[in-house]
Length: 375
Image (cartoon, rainbow, N blue to C red; front, top):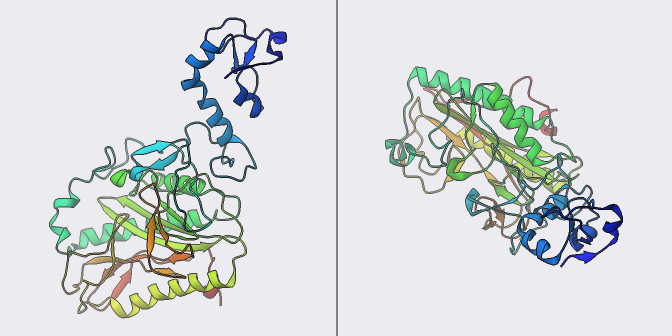
């Protein structure tokens, strides 16, 4: 309930009806908010305005710099529009959900959905979150052999996706939020004329996935600042000229412990060895983990022998501990069941007559962030 204070000395007006006020919201006093907007003429006015007035408290908490708990950490001045994600992106809440967290990481509020200009060609889920063509496509049961024209489009799209990921990698450092990484991914994709495929795919709320520490995959970019010693995977998919290019890499944030370095390097080597021995026009592909857009398919419906002209992704995810996972209340973030760290790497690949072409391979301009590639 509103309490008495010295607001009458300043002739403040009631935030609800505009009459002279001599009461002040106790929560506003606790948060040390300005008296303007927190003064009320009576308990009745205070109660009747509570449903709208309480948003001031949420905004203040989200905007408080230096706070150490989720939802109270400053990130580009998040305000009342920054909320926690629930129900696979279809719901929001101002309070952190209750959950038996497996590690030290916690979700933070997320920003509003980013805008895509009208001139950008979009996939069919962009507006309402529901893919229409994909579920009933013949390519759910067989892998397309792409025409030379489609292969050329795949090369172009995958090159854009690589450049987008490289742009995101360049800003990875302590103090940067994963939301800021998402903004770089979004803006760089749009600047290239593409659409960030994860955005609104089955209501996924962001333009890329950022998986920190114990997050295995599909982490949602939020207001949490990266900390020295973290590892972060950035998963980028770009839609351009009707096709998708998909890749991801796991990066070190500042000074990372030796075990985490070994984990990331091991995962990188798993991908490289899988590409080296596993992509040829004579191998079966039913055992591969194929990533379509941003959704992992573990029970592949398409079974057969690889043929030249087919494209795949390989995406190893390696956990430092047990293989089991848990799902956060947001419905997207998969974390290790024991809270230990996880890493992943991914490339989009084209099967050729003689082997494989890595469509999302590193460029000469790619940031030199992996120690094992420097020697």
